[in-house]
Image (cartoon, rainbow, N blue to C red; front, side, top):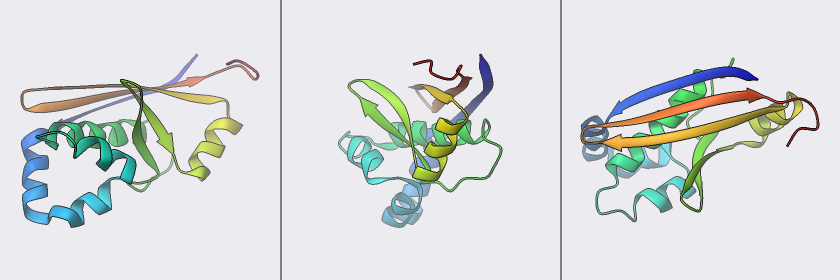
Length: 125
């Protein structure tokens, strides 16, 4: 059963301006090492970074409490993006049998993320 849905759209040029103005300081504040390793291997990392910001914001719209930028992040399982969580958030998701689904996209000037928070019956995979 769907518990919540969150979406977010990020302007990729805004991320480029942020990186130009604040550089490594912004990267360190907003992203985990896992996210940076993935995004910075691209010739233009801005679309991937924008998608990751969108994912964090989309999940935040599903979550009842404010989170810091590094309490939720995007990891990769093969070619599939997945949400990863700090221990406190992960423990609460598990205790409430919640599972987060993520879809990312970027095209031209924007990056999009959709998060669906699913409530599963206890013991369901």
